[in-house]
Image (tube, rainbow over all chains, first blue to last red):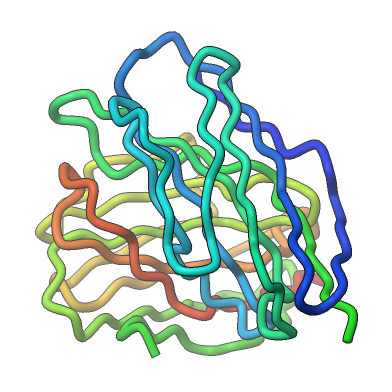
Length: 117
Length: 114
């Protein structure tokens, strides 16, 4: 079974600074997808970024980028130029790429990010 | 607004009560999901429905009873719950459970069982 570990329960960053959120996972599969979701106080989970395991290039979405280390099974999220609106819980998630697999996501416990003005 | 609406937003119930959570999506998706989010625990998938048919039941106790009358609506009927069932219940939808398209989540129902 796959597992996703987010070992840091909380982090804080100064506005306009850069912060990195850590995530590790365990799987025996070679093809899969990794995600970062954001859950603001409104509670609505929003997809931030997605990475396909077969791609060596790290995914980037504006101020959000990932550092995907497949051999180390590490998938960290970097937020550049942090804004007050980035304050939220962030969840790392894993999904198998096996044919026929449904959209079952395995989530980590999440990390609460606060942004200091 | 992601197109997935959940009601009620908050719910307090006693262990002998019967209540229902409602989820509605206006995205034309064919798959709908119930997730449970407990404090300091990973999100847990409870049920998956595809074209109104239940395709996954993740060993959920029978005191939780899902219903999917059509592809746009999903209910979670609750009866004789336990205090440990207190959690945020999130509904989500996707175009197809076999696709990798992102899930669209609702804002959840915060449930407290007394």
